[in-house]
Image (cartoon, rainbow, N blue to C red; front, side, top):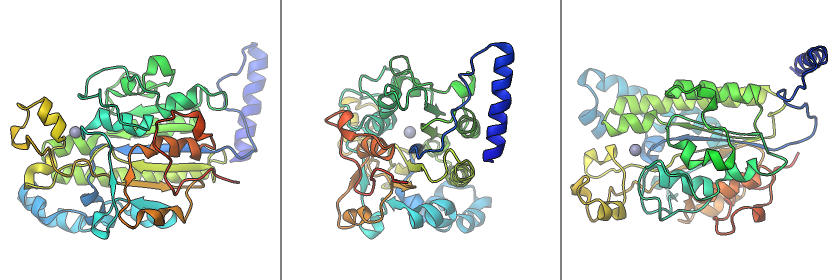
Length: 363
Ligand SMILES: [Zn+2]
């Protein structure tokens, strides 16, 4: 693998000499330890489905009768829905948010849907002004922008997402972060987004990339439980493939921390509330929208889950979240700064502290 890349680089420099064109596209070869981070998000995936697997009541109510047996059997536990998350990430790293065992992961924003969630996650703090999923350029600096404006990461930050609001959330114009460039203007299905992410990792060699998937939220909103669960499993299989690709590449192997999470949860009561997610404040601002949730919001849609694997993950820190102390979505931004080997003091002062289980990675 190493020999192959050096040979290819040598061939390319010969070509550049021949044509007189400077080679500024090839990633630099590096032998030193250089931390990297891959952030993966699955939109609107409930902790209940991650940890418990298919809910029999939802299978009964929201899955076609002909598929009841198949769905119950295929997705009968959390580890059958997301085997890599439970079998590898949770064992070798951290997986938090299982309220059945007293863990808690939550958002701090008071909206409980996507733009407020992604900006909290990426900027390290909720923005109370973001009250709709509207195409508004994010006033806050995301960790992607922070990285792209620092010499050691400039030009090595990428974002690829299935949702068309990401160029606004990342404020692509101001931050200079390429968003969805790899999709060539196509509407991104999860398959295309995922492929683009793997290709970017192989070609542009980013040190920080956010790859964001959306099928789960799309299918949940229309109450298609079997497709929602199947999207989770496909997402998990993607994590396995991604992790394999990272370990096969000497540029990433042993230097890359993977963080996996969701932007918001979904409801659980009444039965059909799993389709939706929104807060009491959102309903106070929009009393006409799903008025059955006025006053309380879709209870539980602020509940999330978080996972991490790689050299920045420390074994001890996880335990500090075992006695009811919640991890917050806002902690992700500074956790990424630290996992990249950066100084969290150079990021937005009001951003939440990094997770206790994240520390600067060492060789
Ligand atoms: Zn949604």
